[in-house]
Image (cartoon, rainbow, N blue to C red; front, side, top):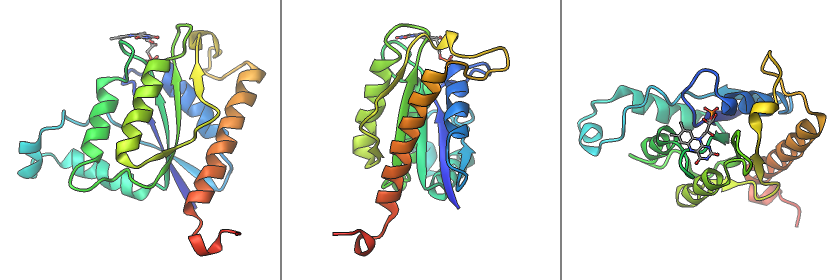
Length: 188
Ligand code: FNR
C-alpha cells in the first residue's frame, strides 16, 4: 500500500485549503492511502531545543514523514507567500536528516482571490528544490475564487474543476510510480 502524506498550510478548521486537500485525496486511486498530517502542533523551529531533544512533536512529525511515500501539499497564500506554519513544518522536517527527500509531490494553492495563491505555490516549489522533493511540473494547480467551489457539505460542485484536479492527480500518480520504480525495472 502506498501512503500519501497530505499537508495543508492553514490551521483554521474551515480552511478552503483543507477542503481542496480532501477533494484531492478522494481522487486518489484506491491503492493509495491518504495520510492527513497535522502541522499545528509543531512549535517554531529552534536548533537549541532540537540539539537538547526537547521537542517530541518534531520527532513524531519526522517519523510520520519517513512513513509516507509521497506528498500532496495544499497551500493558502499569506502576503504572497506560504503560511508561517507550513514553512515551519518544512524546516522541522529538514533537520537531523532531510525527511522530505526523494518524495514526489503535488503542489496546489487556493485563494478566494483571482490569482489562486500563485505566489505561495511558487514559494513552496522553491523550497522543495532544496529539500530534494520532486514536484509535478504540470498541470500547475492554482485555484482562484475557492470560496465559490464548495457546497454546504464542503464538497466540490463544479465538474470542470473536479476533472482538472483529476488530471493533476493522474500526473502525480504517474510521477510517483516513475520515482518509486527501481532503475533496473524501467524500460529502456
Ligand atoms: C490572506 N489572504 C490572502 N489571499 C491571497 O490571495 N493573497 C495574499 O497574499 C493573502 N494574504 C493574506 C494574509 C493573511 C495574514 C491572511 C490571514 C489572509 C486571504 C486568504 O487567501 C484567505 O483568508 C484564505 O481563506 C486562507 O486560506 P484557508 O485558511 O481558507 O485555507
